[in-house]
Amino acid sequence: MTLALRATGLLQVFNTAGVLALADVHTARRVSALGGESDETVLLAFALTVRALRLGSVCVDLTTVAGTATGDEDVVTGDLPWPAPAEWVRTCARSPLVAPGGPLRLVRELLYLDRYWRQEELVRHHLEQRARSTPLFDSARLNTDLDALFPGADSECQRLAAAVAVHRWTTVLAGGPGTGKTTTIARILAALHHQPGDPPRIALAAPTGKAAARLEEAVRACDLPHLGDLHASTIHRLLGRRPGSRTRFRHDRTNRLPYDVVVVDETSMVSLTLMARLLDAVRPTARLILVGDPDQLASVEAGAVLGDIVRAEGHRSEILGRPVTNGVVTLDHTWRFQGSIAALARAIRAGDPGAALEVLHRNADAKESGHGEVELIEDGATDGLRADVTAALDEVTEAALEGDAATALDRLDTHRLLCAHRRGPHGVTRWSAEVARWREANPSGSDWYPGQPLLITANDYDAGLYNGDTGVIVQTPAGLRAAFARGGTPVLIPPTRLLEAQTLYALTVHRSQGSQFGRVTLILPPPDSPLLTRELLYTAATRAKTHLRILGTAEAIRAAITRPIARASGLRSLLGT
Image 1 (cartoon, rainbow, N blue to C red):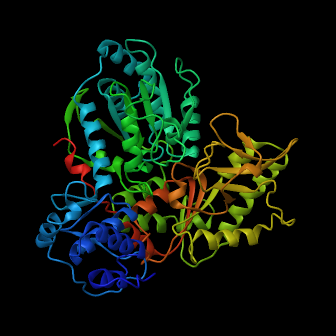
Image 2 (image 1 turned 45 degrees about the vertical axis):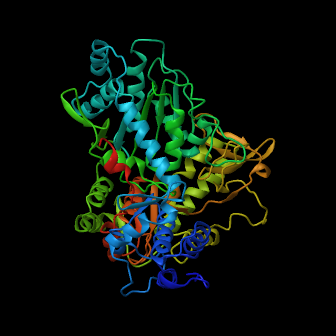
Image 3 (image 1 turned 180 degrees about the vertical axis):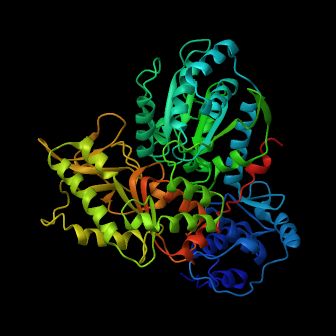
């Protein structure tokens, strides 16, 4: 922890305790000095608001923060001098920082940086405006299409989702991995194609290049007529980059997107800022279909918009004889896996550590015979991990040497090592070094070599690469190339054009979102790690298709499941009011 040496009063106390970081204190002191505010309780509130954004919340609730705030690292235990909530709210309300044009916005007991309050209001306004009108549709044709596209008795939720998408401008399709979300998307698009008017212009998008590629592949695999040759892109690319800005785009309220249907997959990863920009750019008379799993980790930036929409009370209507709130339909039948991985995911999502550990322990005998779907390894043994890593990377290298980029990329996803931390004994840095020691795959010491797995760590708009994209170096007749999946034929780029890339031997759980792997090994940190949460464990567990190995302890499992992330925002309570 870094101490703010010039901090005094409450800022110093909370910084020393580990609740506030150096940046929180510095920002509060600097802006408060410029705004003419000296009350130390207001400075503390300002610093906590900055801290909240850093940890993913949009605002801070002054009446509850004393019971929810903990430090990021080594928090000094003991009582802290929290201001009395009611008086704290009144003091902040009188502050010049909260006056019109000031940097803060106080809404009841919620304190925002003004920019984020405006973004939240923008999202609320667009969603409510879109809910107030209804598209024209042909009910008879819809009923015919529902019978043709969703014939099975197990397709009731999918039928409902398609009906909602025809009835409303905004649809939210929620559900965990393997619940058929992408198949449902393709059939929804087919139903919309048959509605009155010209064939709809469709855009497919996702927060990352990897997620966009998976969306495109899955929609194409459904092989439904009339959809045409659909391509998916990142949301940033869809909106159009504006040089020199990370948050402003070519498409906005003055230059709307030219599409009749916009589908966004992996919406749980979309921050409040990006959602505000997207809603600004989508035409009010275009259908918007938001798809994702609200139980996964939210965006690394502030906001949990998907979770807020799914859990809000909001507007209720009746479609196909079933109540629908805010256009949300949740798919709850798992098609991809039915065994121990699914059972573990259900236990984690339900917040039941006893049931989760029962699943893990029940698989102990099966693990010994090599047939267990899930396993918990508490003794630190890495033999199984090493075997999986070696087998997967050997296959990647073999295909890369033959110039088979598609196979190399496919084999890259047969196993993935996931960590909660970036650094430390349980982090990506340490375990990447361990895998490199096992592999010794680059004896020449050159920067690039066939079979080298890659992770893009910053957006590169010129190359069409985005933070979180994964690829592999392959040998081609033209020399070494970096291959990246893009739904169809892999994209090949000279490695010298890669601006920000690193060798991918291990990945944080956050970066793994939007991806699926055959086998997953998860390195769990100790129970007291602040990064160890229910959402992190659920996200990691549901990345695995056939096998999940957890290196950790039962205590860490319990700690994670009993520690859900609580992101503060006002959106959930405001929708539909």
